[in-house]
Length: 402
Image (tube, rainbow, N blue to C red; front, side, top):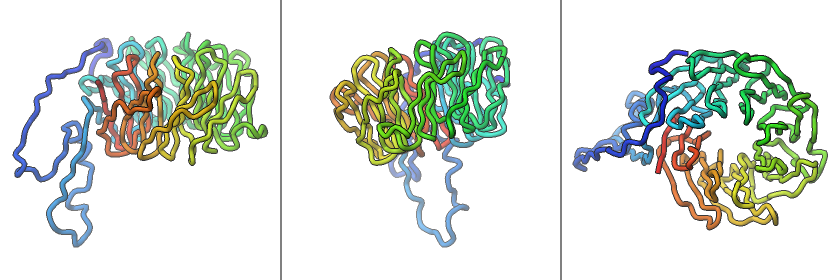
């Protein structure tokens, strides 16, 4: 791990509100780009030499709305994953299609460290729940784990095929991953000791996590199966599959678990979401989308669920009655949603390049943030819900804050 700043200097910082406005005479404007943060990024856009033969006339004005307060621009390809440190929330990690992962400060946009390069895209990054470690998983099947205190790589974890996602145990430094070879793997950190492999799916494991208690693992697959595992024995505790007509009939894309670990919410390529109980009962089907349901979430203060679809819809459901409360709308596919902690608010990101925060009680869009030039693939939400850090197809991470 090569550092541009010492990791010991990682600390929480406030936001600099002393930003001076610059006014330019309207007649002097040729191209309008409303954010200096994007300077390095827009250099990659089409220049005069790239224009088709025969093109002539004045350049067209370009207006880019940008509500971000900061950005990180070291990546040279689309960024697939981003996370915030659980306690030092000025520290972010991001990974992308340039085979790299970086640690950086969200208040300054300064690089803290470039992590060891992978041999393929870095598709998942995650801080441990105690903040001691950070993991970066790639399509090369490798997971690099770093100790943030020693600034050194603790271990390299290998075994599965292309990494799909990463999840840390809620109460210990145990790392879980799902892979394209239909398996899940689990290791202890920092030793890197292999603990278990979980076989039972028949296609890539697209989503998964430990339950909040840490006593079980739940995972979903492209084969339409949802499996509950015993992490100690790798035994299947419960299973749902397309053979049950009440369950999904196509691949599972996303998963959420209730605070009491009793109810699981899944999204699927079959355009539905399903509520199931840990005892094996299918509680109901949530159907309001015309295309794949890509992201789901459960509110921790109200009996509400949210589902986001490729068709741009963001549906709010009453999980007691299984009735649709309201349908919110992006202009393109909803890629990720997250409920705010202990709040009726939720935030979503979309291929329409926007970040939006909604009040689930009223259906009001209370905030829309713009700044990206291409779709937003992932985002991290601060614990107080006031700051969002995004990962986009345009190769930028942007920071938005109230």
